[in-house]
Image (cartoon, rainbow, N blue to C red; front, side, top):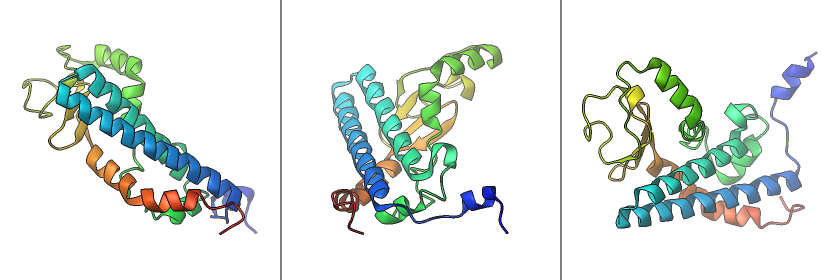
Length: 189
């Protein structure tokens, strides 16, 4: 006989009302991500660095919220959220799954403390727009904070690259299915 912990890891059918609620939240977060991407592109055109990173941070937050709905915080609910992923065609290898860079943007205070303690030269590059590693040479990864390359769609923090174009492509891919599924009545499968 399985113990209770094993029972929690087995994927169970999800109540259709709960499924619809998750789908509605996913739809909202997808719209937030797309609005942030639009704002980011508009800010790049005008050269407004502050607004660009404001929008980038909002895009990362929305994508992280999508990830939490689909897999739970840190993947903790991956099995029980499988019906949500299946309902909109998101696979486990989606770029939406690993949104760790959002933590770097959100927990900036902790990153500053670690930088101060661990950086050898205490150089500091932040809010950089352009090629990630060649715009400013001679910096260690720990000295490179929020960076964005609009030509590749790569965001970087401390040497960890994350491609926003891949995230947005997945969001756009599932959006029609999500809009259709989220508007169904909860009693309809």
